Length: 359
Length: 224
Image (cartoon, each protein chain N blue to C red):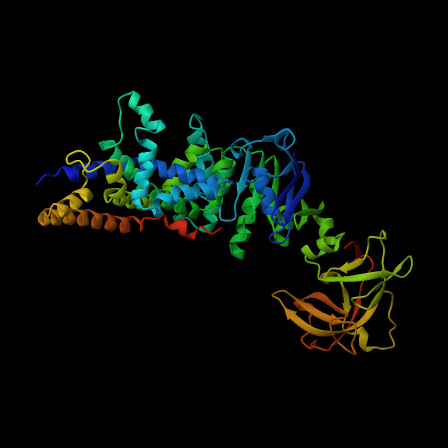
């Protein structure tokens, strides 16, 4: 279990993080400069918070009131940096072994175990600069695990890797995490990576934890505009309430039926670009009336990706502009080549897929 | 020709370099970790680099002279530092120290901080981190600093003449021997000492350039 409730001021930036992990994998997700790395450093004892408490498995690591501040050496935390921070003057074997106490009789045994576990056989006398990026990372992982830390922390471990290697390393990390009994904390700005590697996600912004949620609900139904932006939601509109069931989405110029709890803090609505229903043919038959939450749009632009395309569509076909633009993602196989700019499209914003949000 | 100035110079410079090596490293490591007073300490440690050596010699006289606290204390045990061969070493240490200190600090600051952070979380003691990780990875910078310090200590003149005097066979170093030779009109002797000094200094600089090329290639790839 890890409990963190800390404050730290750095110039005009104020870090105020509070969260708890009970054996799960928590990810801190946020843009650069939001304080996520600083949070890891505070837990590791590298940075000292101005005030607050950090408790790891009933051990108090930091308590400003009781003047407790354990040095990093006593905290039993594992930390993996983006650049792996291997010791350049030591061989692979020395890198893994340096953390093991000299009087530990099993020292050589433990090193051999780790070399085997992380597929590093035959490389033990190599120096870090003689290893590939993936091998370096496995050494860093092995080194982190020799001392049986009580929590594992990762600071954007994959941001320096290319896509193929990243995929392989993620698999490696996942299996290492599966064998690890304690909690883990993962810091990243990459939503896909975070989704694959963690159970829970804490959204951080401007030094504060905005929300902590189970990853599935966080991505499907973000509860605040900030969360929606960080999780990659492209369609967000300001709303005003019309009656108990309908809202007016002012950025899209649409009247929508929606469901959910509607309190006074709710002022935004959103829908994921892959959750918008569409029909390219129905529109041409003008006698087919629009149903609830159905609207006629036209295609303004098409952005082609490898497997899917983003269609920028506008509800205002008389004067296209910023007002009324939405983003719709469809698989490339469903995108007929005849569909180009100015093609009409009928969209369905299903109330099941719409979510109401606070700012 | 009396070779005692060469021996006195080499002895003073080597001992001063040895002491400066450790002193410079520890002071650099210590100031790097400080949060407050960093600027003040750094200025004090660098001061001997910019002050005229005669002023350093004057300060040393004030601090170590017979009338000072330290001087009076040492006198009780019949030790007098002024005009002693130990004074040549002390003068060399003070003038050489800033060079070692600054190069060591520069080398430490270039080292990826994450390496030190990781070492701490792995449970390594601070002195082990310094000797097993920081120093080996900064070795080229530290060796360069050592050579600079040695060359500076060898050429020391102003502070030495103030506190150690110019006693032939006891405190007369090569730099002082040149001075005495010129003053007494012995040009030939002056040329000899000049030749030896230039030779040693030149060799030191050659060595310095060689050390600067030693590097663990992955250090360059380090990143942040």
